[in-house]
Picture 1 (tube, rainbow, N blue to C red):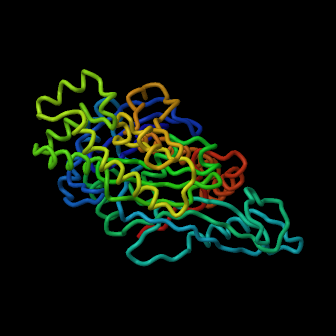
Picture 2 (tube, rainbow, N blue to C red; picture 1 turned 60 degrees about the vertical axis):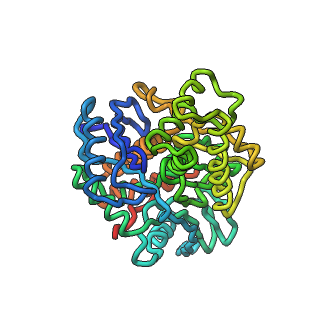
Picture 3 (spheres, one colour; picture 1 turned 120 degrees about the vertical axis):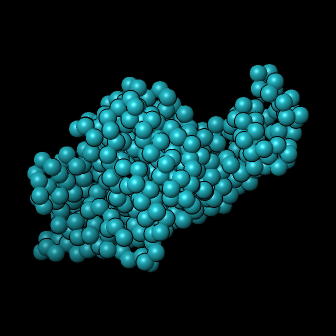
Length: 413
């Protein structure tokens, strides 16, 4: 990869998307290329055929490389029902006569967070800070320089199935991408970075990325992720319902859904109704089948969340079905909007679609990660690591970056 450029690979059940972009000082400067490929060997976010998945990933990479530099390493987005999360809290003593909170105490807290033990079949993938507490008084955003006997840190940890992640990394490495667990991001968190505003996260919001085979869920409270999970349902279930209900092939049902699918038949445009006669159906019948499955998915999203704020943001390719916002409001009684990546840089117009929310979020995540890496490299060695850690810890609550990065990388394996 050329200096200043990053690559991101979003591995979904319906498509695999690779994006290469130039970044500088934590910002995306220019999107260089976008490469899409039909996903194979991946079902509901799980690798079921390593050879097919490797071929699909390689095809996406080659399509992206046709207009940019060669992709040798990448940030990878993944999903699947195996994703789960928890919010542990650890404590550290201030260890000073004046009980002043220092960098050392904050670093000790972070090390304890990364030492939290999970079953052998689970691996820590993403570790994000939520809040500090001093002498059991929570809600503190930057305790440095404050006085207290006990310092607590609460973090949001996303875990995944060990076997799945190893299979995914194997596919990527076979496709020629140098990647490890520390380069992987759960898609719901990535999507949240591209379509949510800081105000959404502060007041509380459910982010649902409805993809082809899975629906990733991220719930935010007090400005940070609080719950991350996934459902094994998505747009493919809608397509399958159409195929069964109308007695047509799956490929034809997918084409019908994309070209004419809507939740409100009375609002269907003439250009979309012309395609229905090919499959001997009506707007009312088509919408009836789609509405039934979409309602089920929407109710599952809310029931999956232990905390239900008043705002729901839908993104992902399936969220683009006409009438989705209005229908979700009627079904759930919540404030609903469809999230689309905004403020895209030069060359990013093709990514202005809910289907690309995750990969755009990966770019934002990677840009921030690169900025932290540059701060560490300025010092070098162990000193560089600690400098990067301290720099991030000191700014994480003060400037509220789009993505929070702090502490050592997750342990692999």
